[in-house]
Structures are given as structure tokens and as C-alpha cells.
Length: 419
Ligand SMILES: [Zn+2]
Image (cartoon, rainbow, N blue to C red; front, side, top):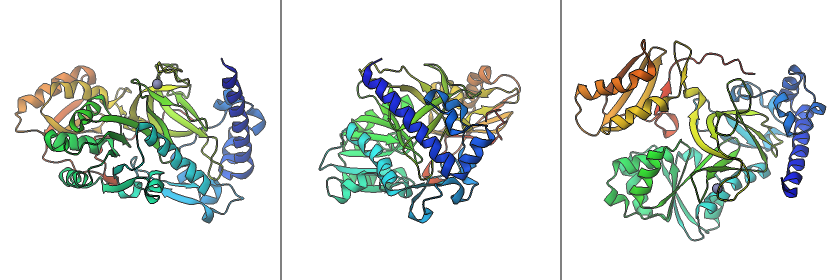
């Protein structure tokens, strides 16, 4: 371990102690939660003690009045409020001071620059209009350092394509699923006219298939970034490899298993964050509900610091089966999609613990045999007692926020026994 690393670890311990003391002293919600958990600030000496602090869910903060979740010495009216897109079905207002908001925006901007954004670029941004909030690039655009045009991602793909083609962006950024829809629906010959240097995607899980498809369709390099409304950018593509770098010095990131224990390298679990610099409305051991797989603690590219190999999606989207198993939907989709190149778009819905429906928009007419073939391919995974049906539909409408929820479980999750 190098000396600078030691020093930064010490500094992180110091910052965690300061945050915990602040939250305990000034934010009623945390004081109450810490007290219930039998923890006081003096119990938290270093990052190694973080497991003693209780976990917080979005729901815990949503159900409290603003005065209980913010620093009581700050006037809530002085804070910047931003609403999440409700991707998880839980719209949530995030509150930050102006300085905190600027730092949040900076995390995204830094990544856009790393991905290759340059002065003078024309930028097309395909997001929900609500999400096109000042996230750093807006500031550059206001200063005329770049020219950004926002395109509403809830439009039909041909219309998005028409607008993006008009913009002729050097830098195209957007929701992973929407950009992939363009790659699926618009002929490559037309997309190739757009000629962006970089396609930067975020906001949705990017599968390997989608990454390849987007790169081929646009003839550009694809950069994937993962972050949230709550904390900003968390991880993004290593420029030289397949891993994603995690490594904000102002965030403590934990990856926890179902029992709340940290997973080892290569293990998968839920990502939980502590924002060391957010004092107005602290986020301490905040559950993001996304499931990630830990990569090595140093990237082969030479960069020190933790990595992720995979972002699987949200834990709420796991399919809980009648026999108690929790199946990740990708495990169902893997063999399904491999066996069915005729599927143009799909929505996988777990309707009950015994019934899963795959709604497919096919490329062309399909016969019943194709659907039966898929059911057969998936049967060994699901086991007896689970009805897996394939339905052919003309269209899958996008949900709130403009995102098609490709994977959806209507089954109320069982309690996991976690704090
Ligand atoms: Zn790397």
C-alpha cells in the first residue's frame, strides 16, 4: 500500500466521522435511526466501522417531512430540488445546496470530457426533458463552448432519428435503451450519416449486445456511464478495457449480499453509497437497489481503485419464485434471446410467482412453434410449476419517464430480512 493511498484512507475516515457527527447532531432522521441501532458517532472511527450504521432506503426518506431529513440549520427553501425520473416507480425529490449541486453536475461533466467531449462540439442529448437539467454540459452550452440540443426520448424512434440527423452531433448522448432502439429500428445506412465521434449512454443497463449494436450502427465508440440522481456519476467505462472504474473520492461504495455483508471480488450484490460531501440532506448507507458485480481492486489499465464488471439492474426486478428462488431476469433472457433472433423488442413480465410472460414485438410474422421453442429453452431454468408464455404484440408502450420497462415483476417481493 502506497503512502498517498494511506493518507487518502485516513482522510476518508476523517470525512466519514465528520459526516456521521453532522447527521447525528443536525438531521433528526439519522439521529433517530442511529439511536435505534444503538450507535453514536463515537462508535464510528473509520470506514471499517461503517457496517454498524443502519441502511437507508429511498422509502425511508420519502415518508419523512423535509425538516426531518435535512440539516436543521439550513432553510429548505435555500436548497436546489430536483426530481428523479421515477424509473423505479418512486419519484423522489433530491435536495442539495448550490455548491453540492455544482459538484454533482461536475461528476457527469468530468465523465463526458473523459469520454471525448471537446470544445466546439455539437451535442445531441436524448433524455427525458425533465432529466435534461443543468448537469454540467448545460453550463458549457450556456458559455457556448459546446452546442447542445435536447431531444425528448419519449418520441418515436424515427422522429428522434430525424431530429438527431438534423443536429448532426459530434457527441451523441442518451438513454442506453433509447439509443439502442435507434440502432434496432433505423437502417444502419441512415444512422451512419449522423457520424458522431462518441456515443455516450447512461440511465439504463447497457447489455453487451446493445453496446455492440450501437457501436456498429453509429460507427462510433460507445461509452457507458452509470450513476444516479442521488449521487451523480458512480462508475464509467475504462478507456482501455472492459471494466468500469468506480472511484469517486467523495463516495463510499459498498456492495452487499442479501444478508447485508460485503461481497468479495467477483461477487454480486446491491450497491449502497455514502456521500461524504453531502451535508444538506445526507445520504448515509443509502440503498440504490441496483445490483452490481465487483471487479478487481485495481484495473489492468493501471488505474488504482475499485472496479465493477457488471451492472445487472435493480434488485426489485429480480423474479421471486414460489419455491423461494430469486431469479435474475437476464438468466431467462439469455437463452431466450439467443434462441430467438426474430424478437425485435421484448418485455418480460413476471405476473405471479407461477407465471412469466414474454411479450415480443417480432421482426415479421412468427409461428406458434417459435414461441414453444422458447418455452422449452427456458423450462429447465424455471423448473416445473412455472408457466412461461410467449406473446406476440405489435407495440410495447413506454412507461413513465419515457423508458420502456423491459423487465418488470408484478410480484410483491418477500422481506429479505435486511435492516
Ligand atoms: Zn481501467
